Amino acid sequence: MSITAENKTNKGRILVVDDSPSNLQLLSNMLTKRNYQVHCVDNGLEAIKFARSGWAELILLDIKMPRINGYQVCKQLKKLEATRDIPVIFISALDNLLDKQMAFDAGGVDFISKPFQIKEIFIRIENQLTIHAAKAKINQLNLELEQRVQERTAELNQANQKLMHMALYDQLTGLANRFAFQQEVADVLAKTKAEPKYSFAVLFLDCDRFKLINDSFGHLFGDQLLVKVAYRLQSCLSSSSFLSNFRVLARFGGDEFAILLKDCDRTEAIKIARKIQKEFVLPFQIKQHEFFFSASIGIVLSSENYTMPEHILRDADTAMYIAKDKGRACYWLFDSNTNSQAFSRLKLETDLRIALEREELVVCYQPIVSLEDDSLTGFEALVRWNHPEQGLISPVNFIPIAEETGLIVPLGLLVMHQACQQLRSWQQRYGVDGLNISVNLSVKQFSQLDLIEQIERILTETGLDSQNLKLEITESAIMDNIESAKALLEQLKKRQIQLSIDDFGTGYSSLSYLHRFPVDTLKIDRSFISRVGASGENLEIIQAIVTLGHQIGMDVVAEGIETEQQKKYLKVLNCEKGQGYLFSKPLFSEAVESMLAGVG
Image (cartoon, rainbow, N blue to C red; front, top):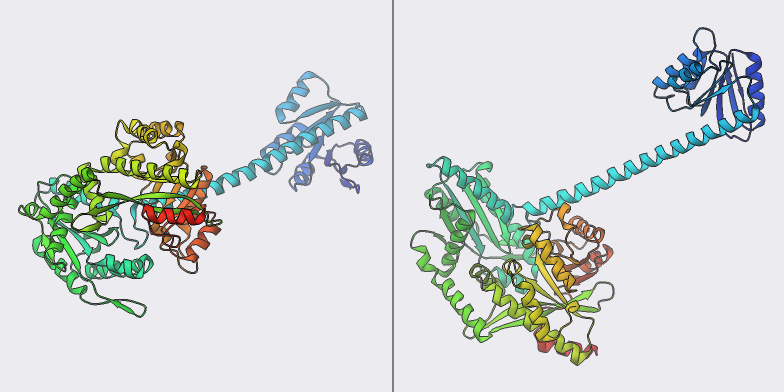
């Protein structure tokens, strides 16, 4: 027998199981009057079948029934996934302790003895329905939370994958970057130790006079050309006798490329270099423009004397510069006599030491603005070398030498002192107390034991408030020694000095570590900004960096902004600040003063 009694107002759905028709009728009438929906069955098998439909929110179950008793029914219900969570209240004339124990062991949540009090039944039913509803709500909340955690985990994994890709690949060309290339060279070096007859070659290539194209047509145009160069180099290698797994092509930044030729001898390496130079005779076409430029190539062959990838790249770079000195558009094979031919670089190093003493190095200031309203927020200090014979020398030409020789430390302190002194002077003359000055801190500076004392001395001597100084630190400087870097950054923050991770995305900051550093700002490298097209292409990585920065409490600055479209898309992504030629090129102090006077 199966009977359903419904009421318009529903306080809950109850399945009543009893082999006595009079009991079923009594309970059904009583519960229906209290606005419960009731379904009655008179045997255990029918109860199990109906309970599996999912209708019942609570079951009132008799114990003594034919064929299958209440204990067995309850045990069956608790085994089934569809019914195991439905609360079961036993109603029985059996009233000894053993019967009640068996009821609870079977999975019951309560036990009501017959004859029962109507008020007691209502109270116990309401209690169990409330508990059941609360459990259902908790389960639902847990499911929603689990879903949110899964979604968030997927987002973080995706962001981590993008950062991993940025750590190994050049974002402009898709080629391997310096880090990935060095790993490949380290692998073949290890192979030469195990197999003495194994040989390889490294080619270091620089596009001749490429800077002239950048200066004349802009970096956006130059980047399009670099993509064409990468494609042509890939074509040269693809059409050669080398299988794809025996060659590695990488972009090191700017217009520098490197090639690793595995299982290669001197003759084959020279053959590839000549083939590349032959291909560079053909024009590179961008829209209606044709460009002609050559390539200077340095070649290093494997040798038992090499133990580190850095040494091979150093010598390949030296050979490439000699090729440039020989008139460009040629290659140079590094040998035992090559070092003597690197005299020009040694002379540049000597001149740089003298320049530091004679204060030939000057500081330029590139404005950093708010993308919200284009208001000035500060400057980045950039060093230039006013050579007495050669005029202004680009930092591209002398900063690497300074880093190699350790001159970057006194050079960096000189720049910091000049920049702090200059900003303090502008504050006094023009009332620009809210502006800050960003100063780059090199890897070598960051590792100096007396760095804190040097910075405090500069702030004391110049009178600049520490809150107006922002130090820009590269990812590699931080990640090389995480614990000591964290301790140093915390000391700087205690002195209210602002901190920024410079060129973010060109190295690899693990998500598990980045939030541990007390950094204020992430600075997106210009290589990502330059790839943003007029229709907003290539924004995914920038969006990932902005989102990451905001989620760990940092603001974001984009460098290298050159078009209104780039600015517009960065603003939509909630990037707070930016700098680049769209706003201003780096300015000498006199030009900045004219600008500040105009603002005033």
